[in-house]
Length: 292
Image (cartoon, rainbow, N blue to C red; front, top):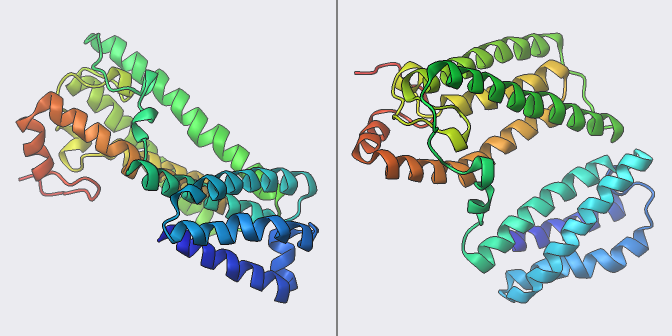
């Protein structure tokens, strides 16, 4: 179904750029229309339609081609400052094509490969509170530095380079600052709860030794994730970058679909009925203020 939609979207886009000069400039820049169409129509549009007809081997044509075009468009848009929208659309198409191709051949997305090394689920080897709090602080600084400073700065630079930036009203920026403050407090509160009540840290490789049901975990099962999503959205609002907001929301969806099932399976295996009872009482995403 996805590849059928991709074929229709590709066909509609090619029809659009031949009739709407503004769309062509925004997504294709000054690239040669005839040259691009000679490759893209058969390898993207037609190949996607062939996959939709259940010719599975055509996946090995359309997915690599989509990824290659996405990379080339990113380079082209960055160098020339043209076709920024085209680069963004191809990134989305490449990610979706890879996921859809994995579902066709494997029946699932191999997300288990994402939980290796420092991201594999293991209980913390130390239960000394001072050490746990120190490690938790270091982890927060590293993760926040990478995901809330470095990556948003890179994304925002692409947004400016691709001429896709939008000016946010001052009230939106103020709201972003308020959301950032609230989300950061929630993140610190959740991390300290893991160290104080669970004898662990937020890092998967040093997970809690005890099921944490106190602090923010008494109201919702994933306060750290909620805090991270809120922080990412807040950073986007604060610096006036809609692409950073999309980055935060897309990251939350990928975490929910690819990582959370493994995390919950691990919690169920380690804590058994205790976790099952907790999961029945406490919501996954929507805070429950009544703890009775």
